Length: 463
Image 1: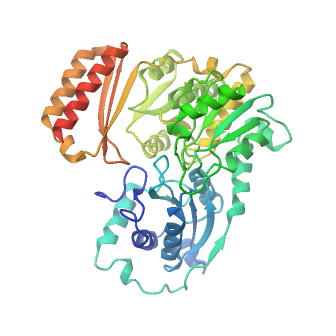
Image 2: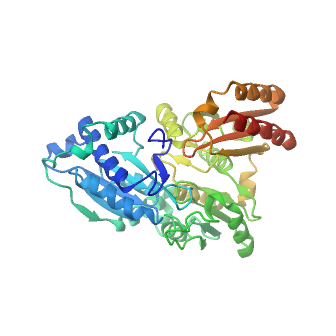
Image 3: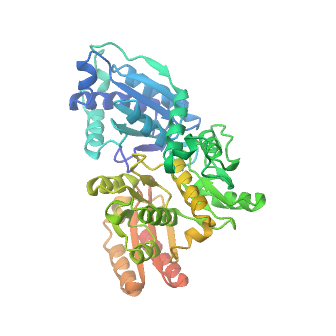
């Protein structure tokens, strides 16, 4: 698998790259590193065992991987609250809310059912720091690693089922809406008919319920997980399914999640896609108008469309740019004390209410803005004009070899010279897959496609 941790935890083919043995050892190594760092000190000084939350998406492999992680933690003297199927942002929120020392999610997000992954949250609900991940990886390969550990002094951890905590998470989402209206008998989404595509994933129960409690008439699709159908022809990676459903039902809008529900993408009443850049722009403008956007600044990644930057500049909103990955967006937000950031892919972080991208939270606030302003989603999204953007994934490549290619570097330089100030080029290695992503923006879509095709050819030559 190369470096154990990518930009979003450990990920691989379940049973091949990501085995039960690895999951158990990773959990034990994580407990050892956190104990050594002092993260468990408060609990242990009080004569208590540290607590970890474990949640998963509904893919079949999550069942044995969950069992392995629980075994590794309990065997290391950590009490475990087993949340069952739960969105990633719910685990992050509950880790903070319940004062747990660790949160663990078994999910491969938007990947197909054969993949799975392990994401780690530290106390407070924030993703574990890179340095801690590196130390965990080192410990896994060390001779004195977790396989040689002795029974914990405080005794083995106890395991408790805690699936009912989903209600606490739902109440938190509804309370985040203006004036907490959805928790006081009022309905901020009243009058809206919404189709929600849950990708047969972790949001299949909680997202339709939250939208309904907020007052919307809800039509749920992709909400019948069987362990094998997650992300299959549905969800945020297959928006054509959602678009068709919105048109069929005459809905006002559609919401799409990925497998673990940390993303939100949308379609308007005409079935036209509203991507993460447009959602981020809508929320930024709404918060700015209410004087609730600190520093009048929003955080976005290098992948954000040029049209987003143009729209923010016109509104007097500063854009802070980061590398790709919501963890890097979050780092910049915390460093600058900003409260809104996100990615074109639909990872939107609203730091006043969440410590990670939260697809359900984003959906509620996007739809509440639509209802509050009394305008269609299409009109809100029109605040920014998307520049033609071509994004091509080149799979199965040696990312290190591609990164070192002088020929590819020359091709990129040539493309940048050709586009000048009217476009942008970005060639980067994926943090979650063995792939290189090529992105080209240009005012002329034909030119963008031609330049992208040349760069893809250069990447393949560099392999």
